[in-house]
Length: 103
Ligand SMILES: [Zn+2]
View 1 (cartoon, rainbow, N blue to C red):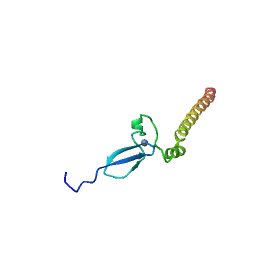
View 2 (view 1 turned 90 degrees about the vertical axis):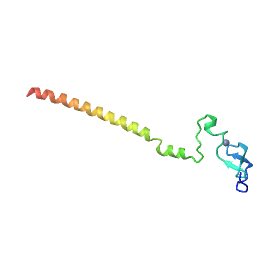
View 3 (view 1 turned 180 degrees about the horizontal axis):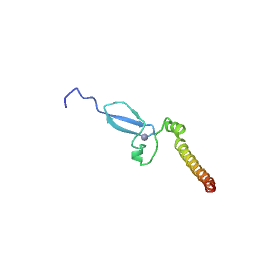
View 4 (view 1 turned 60 degrees about the vertical axis):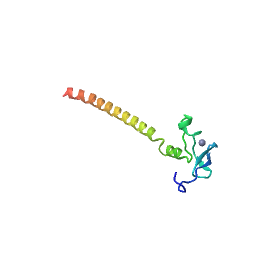
């Protein structure tokens, strides 16, 4: 190692927002504060957990959550209309046919 060009690699404490803290070595030299660590990150816990500290997902769901539902309802209504139209056409044909026979 060349002298006087390397930063000091010292022990430093890491504190996570979940309350966990541990010691590691770093050139940072101060106490580190992190939002996720190996104790609480879903990758390590194996649990599906959403790290949504600002409520952004809630906001999104409130804004667009009904979108799929609305679309399905629209589709249903459209299908019902189509059916009705087809039935109406059938009825009209039935009404027209006897008249043609009389001619
Ligand atoms: Zn943590």
